Length: 311
Image (cartoon, rainbow, N blue to C red):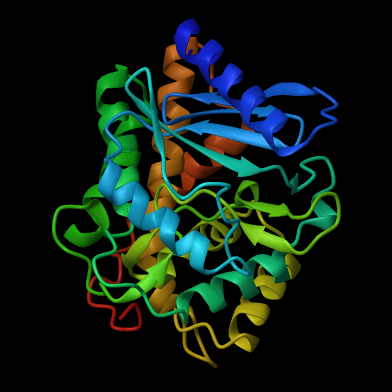
């Protein structure tokens, strides 16, 4: 949990920013996320985010600049300059309506795919940092190694070891020119203006240049693990291709491009699940066991290490 002084200070900052934007503030407040990699609080129509510890001013500022320049793709910040609060960099954003987790049939797969395709076709600015997807996966594996003994650790580590070095954040990515989100999932979309404006991508913490197929890896992994229905996957992939997304071929088999990123995301998801289960002293649930089982299967089928479509 976040230390109380930071939470209290961030809440006060969000309140002050909200009152500065509107004379009549309804004063609705809430903590939207409280994780080691980000604290997010809301006050009325203003959201304040404390970015992960260790976030550098230069890299965050360059990522915020991308969101500011492309408001039709990414939610732009209220101010492109982060501020320091208790040693954490903080940014302020307008509130948007998130995806409803209780209505999976209404999940905006087509909108997500179209936004990704447009993002991938957007020229990356000079000096933008590398997309952090592989680095986040590597951190999840590191936490798994530290979590303690569990029967699921071995298959996850075997699946991880079978990946090429770039997917484990050990060597540079084969593509460093494509603009990528870095951590695409349905929680990274909101409607703005709320409640029913167009869908936009949020969260620039992992934004950067890299292999665009990584941004398709979570839905691809879910589909491969049996956690995403085939019709939802088909809708997502079709919309991405129709929007001329460069991560996969326009026709034919997409898996030569998606195989390695999907395997990496599966290992990352399984690592997080096992580490959480060990920390809580509980067994894996059905979904968690499914991704661990997928890692076990992956370890017996060599990954397509020499895949060219990711370039």
